[in-house]
Amino acid sequence: MMELDITAKIAALRSTFNDIAAVADTARLEREIADLSEQAGVPDLWDDTEKAQKVTSALSHRQSDLARINNLAARLDDLEVLVQLANEEDDEQSQLEAQDELKALQKTLGDLEVQTLLNGEFDDHSAVITIRAGAGGVDASDFAEMLMRMYLRWAEQHKYKATVLDTSYAEEAGIKSATIEVDAPYAFGTLSVEAGTHRLVRMSPFNSAGKRQTSFAAVEVVPLIEQLDHIDIPENEMRVDVYRSSGPGGQSVNTTDSAVRITHLPTGIVVSCQNEKSQIQNRAAALRVLQSRLLLVRREEESAKKKEIAGNITASWGDQMRSYVLAPYQMVKDLRTNHEVNNPSDVFDGDIDGFISAGIRWRKRAVDE
Image 1 (tube, rainbow, N blue to C red):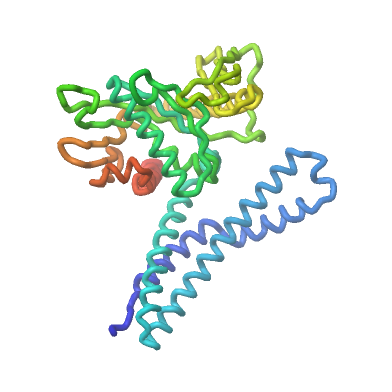
Image 2: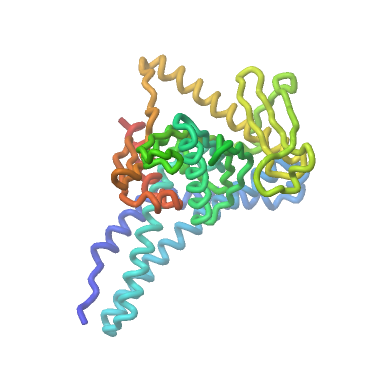
């Protein structure tokens, strides 16, 4: 049996790991954990609920970050020992295990390397995704539903909690719009590169002539703000409407006026939620989404002012950021990063990590230039 030689690959992984550890700054993490642990141990901590939640949440995140770094360091050490033992004992099974662990570490470190680029103000927040059908008639509403499923499958594969807050169904097929909450650390920073106009090209199943059809859908991604990021919205700036939830299947939520729609009068932003049975719960969820969108509007206004002062008013994201082509050939291509794959079915089944990683790296380069 040939000796397993992956020394160069392990060295490359160690180099990547050292870069990640330097950015994470383990010494700083340890100091922060010690400080937060001391704060969390104060007897009257929970007399101030908001402060207590902030402290315990920050402590949990720092401990998780440090544990992740330490775990990767241990796995790299174990991999080197496993390779050495496998070669000394000429053990084929151990060599296979070492190769599998190498691949797993390459993926884990690659994902973590991308995450180190997520250092925006709200990148570590959960995300709210809104999908809207655009031009293209029935094909566009069907495409919007395909995108909704794509993001739900992506969340499921990563074991992230995803909740459909609201869905507006189209008359013939698909959806007019949908709002999804993805509750996971760094969900906003990760998914924010999905924002923009998506285009689908295919032989339309809704066209009797079987002609090729182009349709569009818009994806909006905003951070889900926490109570500590709260934006006060005066009651006189909101119109709240209640109505019966709609949708196929005859759910029990359809029997009462539990769905809530909130219109922000100054901006015209409308949000709705019908996921919960309780009107109070739906109102709270809708208000959180409204606050998140207003926060994004405020950040965009601040960014626009900075660009105007700098003399640069060119939008950083084009109207069409990704094309999904099903006919006459099979391809999905991101027009910003040029990342492309030839398996649209896998992409629509949630396999979008390659596009997300490429998008995050592209955005980082654009900011640095």
